[in-house]
Amino acid sequence: GNIILTNVLTEAVKNADFIFEAAVDDIEVKRSILDRISHMSRHDTVIASNTILLDVNDLARYAEYPERVIGLRFLFPVYCIPEVELTTTDCTAPYAVEKVKTLLSEIGKTLVPRSGPPLVLSPLQIEARVIAKRNRIEETRRRALTTGETSDIKGYQSNFVYALLQYKHTFFATDHLQF
Image (cartoon, rainbow, N blue to C red; front, top):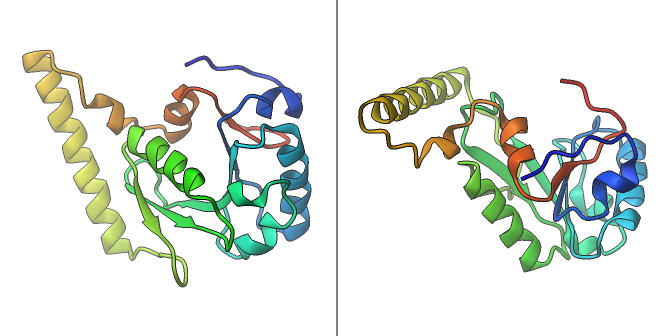
């Protein structure tokens, strides 16, 4: 897909299929962002908010078409933890969950529904996932060098932002991006 750089929020979100908001966990900041992007984007655009502290139902109230709002939290370190927490609201539409599930699958992630407190991995669980990820990457590289097969490299991008930016019509809605 194409990467479009803009500092105009309307341009960034107007044709997006999926918007991932990852602002600080402050209700007023997120309220402002959700209100703005939900009015600027298409009515079927899924809007995901990255939050660990806030109630996604409260956030969805600020959005036009709240049925398209979900909570989405990538576990740290993102590049090697395949699980991504999904929190639905009381009115999240099934199409929104399916769209996110498809996106995550395409970048090698696994959707984990959140039904209680946030999933927090222990240091041992994180280290085990880092080692497993390194091993999968090394095996993929080895196979690519010996057989030329690269079909599964897509799922092992080391940079999550890069992988998501490659996804067609995916944009990040923030007031500023720092890389």
